Image (cartoon, rainbow, N blue to C red; front, side, top):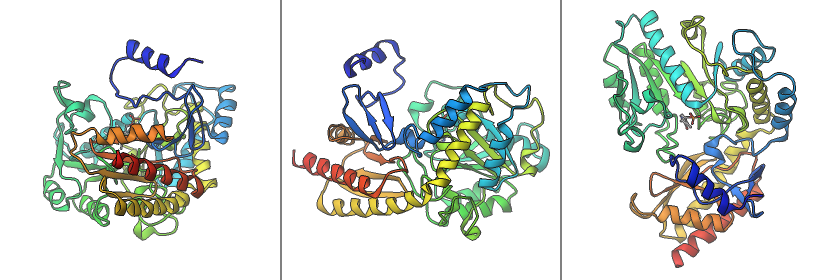
Length: 422
Ligand SMILES: *Cc1c(COP(=O)(O)O)cnc(C)c1O
């Protein structure tokens, strides 16, 4: 097998340098573990940005993939296929929406939601043509298309990619007054928000922020659009982050009062358990029905292979009670990090929900301390990646056991204390 060194030099030589990976090559994965070509084993604490919630190469998902791959993979939507309907029914019933529009990547899901929202604004709300605006938040991350980076305030993501798509207003995340003010504008069609901002450093808003935001949207007849691509599918200890305090395996089943139902829900990443790109936008009839034949789609969107994989990925979430496990282990993880914070000056705080957590490193955002800690974590058998300078995100697969989690806590503790002593 190719060595770590050779694999890295091939990517460096032939690939576009659009990423800055940690220098580790992964050649195999199983559950919470990944291995490099030399046979070193690591705990995966990134889970492909929460795409691998179900763990690497989950046998139920891979089994479904293999079987479907031998049967039928792609038909295009010029014809019906015998899996898509089943997938749409499963998603609709699990998340409590009338309809599903399937796509492939997360960014396509966001683009789809933006298009549906604009069309709804002209045809249902009566906004003048080409005047619809969508409110977004500062420090958002919604993907990499030209329209989406038009409303990013990350210079790396947007600089020299203009001219930018108009029609977006930015308000501060977790600031309900600013949102209220922005919603006074009658040409506002919707509010697009991450229930927890993952890329920005696992920013958890005030506990009543989403509920108030939804109420304001309703009052001003604007669509509340939740991007749950990273936070959804059990990551934060409930099926969706907008499920609030409920950890059952269906949205809105047990505690409807804590559930902030979006008008448009965007899913991706773990929707297919890290096996095949599948994203989807969910909405009820009054919103989704503005889309008519020919007005939106994708060749691979809703293909039988992706649909089969996604059904299996959702079954794993239910069967293995991943939301409950994420909730339980997340609590333990944050408690253990609090203990470590009491022992060290290197970490200033831990925050997060379920198994989407981050620690802040006691150094400037420009420093390479978080990167160096991640390098040491790698040497000690745990993979994590810094986000926004001095923040390290910790998001292991949700199939982790408590025993494995405690092993990981010991690795993090040892690494941090060693680093501080060095
Ligand atoms: C990853 C992510 C996206 C983009 O998904 P891609 O599959 O990379 O296009 C959009 N929104 C959020 C919140 C994400 O975490």
